[in-house]
Length: 185
Image (cartoon, rainbow, N blue to C red; front, top):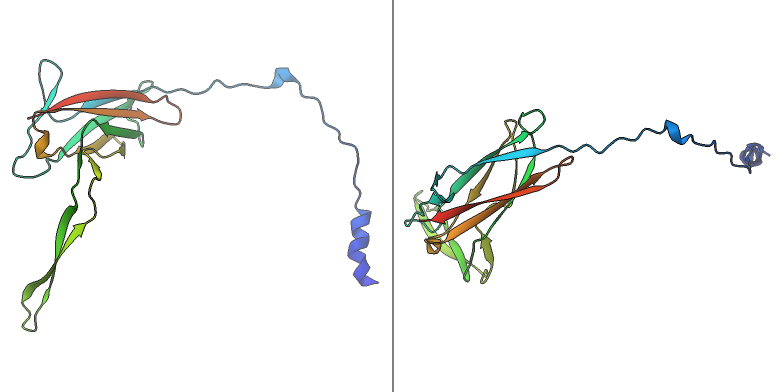
């Protein structure tokens, strides 16, 4: 008898077969316009600027790559304050191609007399034809609205003009794109 009690309660709970929906008064619905912010990007690439609007970077001929930091500041047009955590995407007109050997590492160890010795050199191979970009692809602004990325042109790019495109935006903004040109000396 007790095993049928849960089934009995199932039948005692009523179910309605009619569905009643109350009509909606269209005049009471509030519509919000989508929020759109405008962000400004002020580039400061830390390079000298010529009269034609081109920046100049001296390539270090003692190293394969020349590392340089590009900086910018993102501000909100409404409050003129810094924009925090705004994504900036970067692309460059230049890249370089790896040959088969990327580099090598040297294994070192201690002898029984506790002297450091190099006992093996291994070459990192198998990268033939891989493209290496000359810029980091993305970065985010900090609490001051400052955003940074690194470029790394190589020696055989001397004499070229590198174009850097950058796009910034967010949840409530449209994405904007701009560019700078850097002459590699």
